Length: 274
Ligand SMILES: NC(=O)c1ccc[n+]([C@@H]2O[C@H](COP(=O)([O-])OP(=O)(O)OC[C@H]3O[C@@H](n4cnc5c(N)ncnc54)[C@H](O)[C@@H]3O)[C@@H](O)[C@H]2O)c1
Image (cartoon, rainbow, N blue to C red; front, side, top):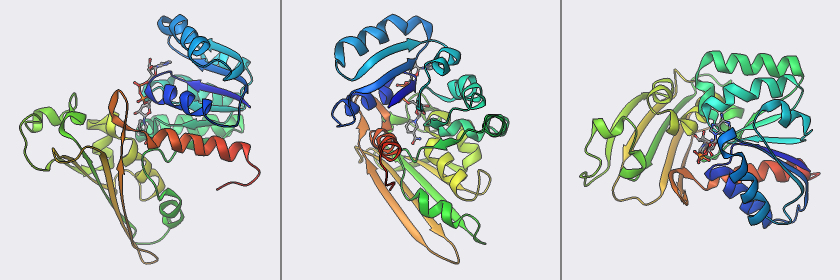
């Protein structure tokens, strides 16, 4: 397998760590796209910390060099701006991309650019289920009349530091679960872009950004990131509650996200997909 990863932050590093524990190795090649300032550091880390991971390791700083590496599986895990910067040209070159920064698609113009590029290039953009589950069911129901989706994102107070939540409530001193945002997935994506991935995934799979209801909550009594959502429809009603452990070094990100990327890689390799 010729794997390419866009970005080399928490998710990418944990993905590489997990890949090294799997039986798919060695990869034919691993190509990482990073910002130019981090090129040498990323190359050194891959060559010293992950010996045996891939027969060939390359670190590139633009999408053209990534395409030239001829990867057969590309994972974006670099952020919303990186989706806009690289993914359209990669799709246009006929390469499929698995996107982790799903919240980027909350901006209609970006979603449209990605769609057009995928159509022109004959490529597919896949959105990873990431930190949430049950997306197969929600997506199956999305043409059903009267579908309603309500999502609650509950994290420890400090996981909301650096977001508008810190102006809305006193994150350091709350003693019980406190809701600081209630609105649509569209509004959540604009105000909380770094936490918008789950709401965006639910919106895209289900009833869209304007109709998906979102509540964001800081709770000093939780240590995990909790994602709850309720689906009501004429065909099926269901509720899901996930308690996800955060990644080392990033309280905002659930480690489950990495496992959902691994699932996509497994399905790519395996003759039977599930
Ligand atoms: N779908 C989900 O459920 C889900 C869950 C968690 C996180 N995410 C998203 O996944 C993405 C990655 O998360 P993370 O925790 O690894 O973040 P991170 O900040 O730890 O890592 C991002 C990395 O990308 C690099 N980067 C940024 N801009 C770049 C660019 N233009 N070109 C190349 N590299 C660039 C940064 O240097 C950094 O190393 C984020 O967008 C996050 O919002 C999605």
